[in-house]
Image (cartoon, rainbow, N blue to C red):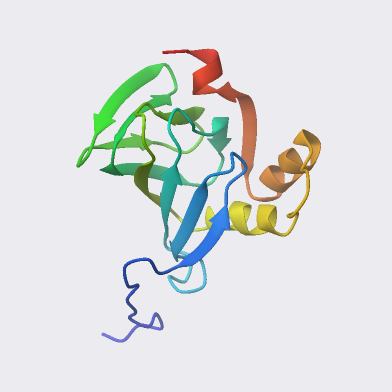
Amino acid sequence: MSTSIEPFAVQPGGGARLETPTGDTAYVLTNTRNTHGSLTMLELVISARNGPALHVHHREDEVWYVLEGQFRFKAGSEMFWVSEGGLAFGPRGTPHNFQNVGEAPGRLLVITAPSGAERLFEDFAELLPGPVSPEMLASVARANWVEFVGPQLKDSDPL
């Protein structure tokens, strides 16, 4: 059986490095182009006590696999505490966010299906350097089927 998707590999430390809206780092390991739209894989390096604002992906289901550290994930009304080697899942349409609850940077492998999650980070990077207003970020998010609907977990549910 032939396929139009070419095999590829990403070496450790590989992938495009992008800044996240919270000042952390996203490495794009797979994207829409090299998976023909099937999935996106990102490695996120999240600083201590940090994480994204509450948001909804309208297109993608999302898996968070903890590579390093301790995280808590809020998905809908559920709160999951997950350490290295564990994972959490957030289905599309479910408001969610997460927080590195450790004192050191943590690392997540994020897999979304279908692909496209990388485009929010790519479009955000085009706004840098310089300040990005909440309105500009909301516009980039909407263009990528994401909607911010609340604060960061550290603000809504402090430890």
